Image (cartoon, rainbow, N blue to C red; front, top):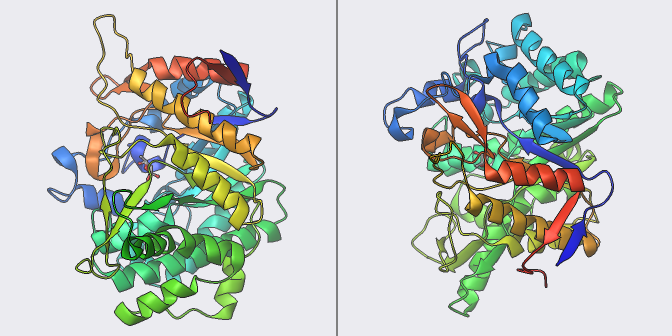
Length: 457
Ligand code: FCB
């Protein structure tokens, strides 16, 4: 048995997002979001679930902050619902909405929990979707106005800001696959959306700097370590894997950290779809220096070429590894590969894991406990890989487990549970799961005993 200890001041945390936990979907002047609209359309979300009530965090937040304290987290990542603050997306702010976040954030600060606030975790005001959503460049300006107002009100209380959560998902799941709000299925629109999201990111970073705050600001990307199908060794699959990396990872990383879109992807897209107009000025704004990169890691991608799959001509294959309840393959070493690669390709940037976790089919047992050994094991193995990366020089400074509690898992509704805290949606009772109790010890000891040296290469 050996003990691994993380660097001093390592930021252990948990994460959530507004639409997934708050509920109170039309209370105190909140406007409709695209997820309110989408989830009320029959068949869009499993079991007809909506975020109308969710974990009722809007009302139960004092109790939830107590739970965070009980877990001993150093930091809590939450997001702000834009339509709670600007019901119309722009114009007059709704003071009641801001009051909720102020109260919550003050309570966190009083309890010595660092708030990390995401400005956009997918709940666009529906009013802005009505004028074209993120495909309309005007929305970039409305986002900047929203960001400035939030910075003005909360900037002194919040040390860590995240402009966007997973712009890849917003662009391609929301506007190409259509499985998420707003449910559009057009690749060229999705590309346009991605450019505007990145532009709005850069504008928010500039605004934050201009306003003279001293905290840190970054962006969260969902990155996938990509490998060619391990069962075949051909050039087509290798090329498809590079394309997949361009589509998923470099399309977002390169503009932010290198001030350009990847040339191979611009070439590929130009032959197949409409590529957005991209000016040098846009690229300068997008590449405004950030303080850190947030990464959400859930699974690896094994790729095969597939000429019939327009427009990327590739598909995913499964390798037979264990999977979570989402069907996502479990590969902790992928986190190590990803971290080391980012460190190497992007100049040793400071990184935080802003999400990592797993859904499993939890049960409350006869003793009223949730013994989620599978989730505990998942976290244990991923923490070890994060530790290895730190040992190898990666500047990883924090780790947020997704999620603080079970919540509305987008198109999957409440059927998929990611929490280290169980939520009984009928009674709104919370139960810290076994993984949560274990995580509490990890935080307290800033590390843990490695009982079984799995993956510790
Ligand atoms: C990520 C989202 C987060 C959560 C996890 C499981 O893509 O950012 O809100 O749903 O997946």
